[in-house]
Amino acid sequence: MPKTSMEYQYCRKLYGTYEAFTYTYLGSELVWDSSEEGFKVMITHFKKARAIYNLVGMPEMAKEMDTTVSVLTANTQSKVTKEGVSLTDVVPHLQSVYKQSINNHGIDSEATIRLGLAYARVLWDENCRIEAERLVTKLATISRRVHGPDHKVTVEADELVNNYMERQVFVLPDNKQFQALQYENDGEICVVQGPITEPRNTEDENIYHIANNLVIPMEGFAVVCHGLVSAPHLNGELGEVRGDVKHDDTEIRLAVHFETKKLKSAWVKPENLRIVFELPIKDNTLLDVYIRSGISNSKLTMRTVGLADKRFNSTIFLLRLNQGQCDLLLQEFDLKVAK
Image 1 (cartoon, rainbow, N blue to C red):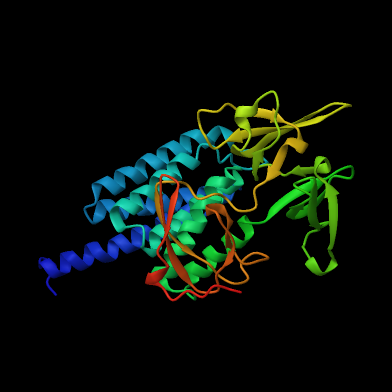
Image 2: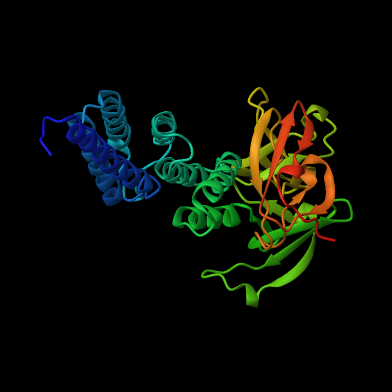
């Protein structure tokens, strides 16, 4: 094939694009590795991607890589310590790379899904865990539909979904780590499993029923305010536990940052918080949602959209939310309701 032919130029650009995206993905995978060595390898991968984009005539992607490398290097040079590299400044630039992949290759592509999973891992490590859980759930759904349930990227996404749906807590007074399972007595009692040790062995763990005021959600996990008197407008608001615990001889308060951006963070007592075991689905969204028997510790249910106690054993259904009204298009799929 002559190098001057259109076929050669097409193949050169196609193969170059795949190679560049491979380096972009490899670099993105290392963003959550906070070691100094991991940071150096990540920058090397991004630089290789930049060079290939320039070589195959994709200046916009090359410029995106150049910006990413420059900003990451500038923002982290002073932060490489014995403890590793801070990821705070990495998050927006990995988000930018992920969105650029969506624009250039579509949200269904394997490269985009892998970049999204890498972005979700960094969000999780930065305790932006509501956003991380929503993202991996969406990516797992897309990968399952497009690439199949046994594809490597689907298996990877499913594993993250399972891990991110766990809700871990500290139980007073010993501050031991447990996994929260559910509430009883209208939220007064939290059922937990543990204590958790590393490496974890669930066979050695037990089930306990603990008063809710002795259960402290771990940083980053989803909670909702309940029973607030001085700030009733926060009741029912979804948020994440972040930052240090404020405590004295009489009470403990946790810093809660709310998903609704206009709301200011607040210090809330543990007894005024409820762990959110299943994130509510946002309104005005068209989603493909898959339900699998055995995900996490139980089957997913439709409680979050008001279809209580209805469980599904089949693969995929389409859920349309429009201003809070749920239109479940079951007729498009062969779904069986578990009795």
